[in-house]
Amino acid sequence: MSTENPDLAIEAANAPRPPGSGGFGLADWLCLAAAPTFATMALLTAAYGGQDMMCMSGPGASMFSGMVPMYLLMAAFHLAPWLRLAARRA
Image (tube, rainbow, N blue to C red; front, side, top):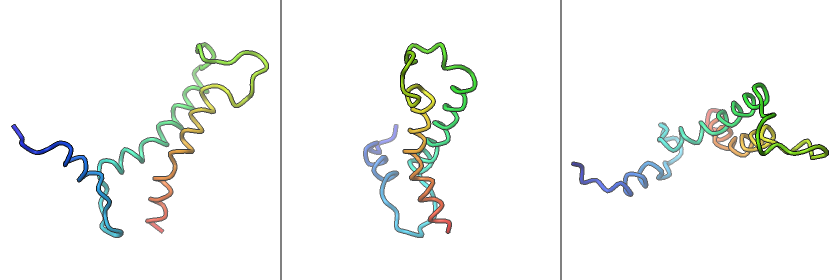
């Protein structure tokens, strides 16, 4: 049985690293997974039917309501880690 404190392990994984230190931690990889996941969910919902969902809006509603725009908006909000990665590579 390990005596390591799990809170300390989480802090160490999320601790800021100095610029140019290289490697990615677990939290960095999880951040990078969010935007493509939401974009994929938007594509799948648009292609394979969000028509039968309970949260679909009725006639006369805004074109920005529904699951596809929500997923696209969530993907846009989660682009920051990708932009940081691109800036680091440049």
